[in-house]
Image 1 (cartoon, rainbow, N blue to C red):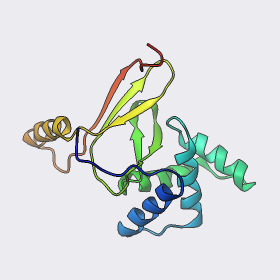
Image 2: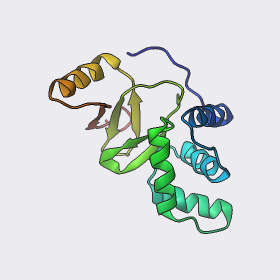
Image 3: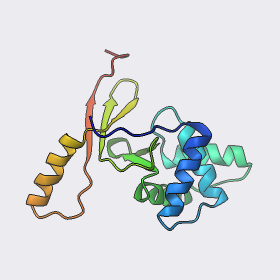
Image 4: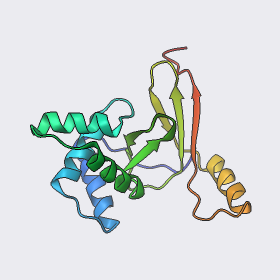
Amino acid sequence: MGAQHTLHHGAPLAKAAQTAFEASGEQWTAMRAIVFETLSRFPKPASAYDIAEAVSTSEGRRIAANSVYRILDLFVTANLARKVESANAYVANAHPDCVHDCIFLVCDTCGQVTHLDDDSLSARVRAAATNAGFSQVRPVIEVRGKCADCD
């Protein structure tokens, strides 16, 4: 496994996310805070539509999925969220103060996603991409199968 890091939950996660976001030069607005808190409460990866619906319900006014997509893109860039590409869905990064490449284990049965940090594996992927002429490589590896609960 990769280096040790602190996994945040609840209010400490929201505070760590705000700190990391502001350190990246972005403003932590009320809407961004609501979108992040909503994303962090989902037990499985959530789409922008899932988040927009939940925020619309909690705020009592319609929030467009396009607005949520823009916020999620900012969150991914700032390391606050990770995108599960195969599901076009997002998960909150429980350690936004650490930068690791993504390795997701995606259960085809229940949809649960487990995030692993294995810097030795992703370093080899990064090196292969760099050798092929890619720059600013940030690997996202997804492994599909069945989780222990569904197997």
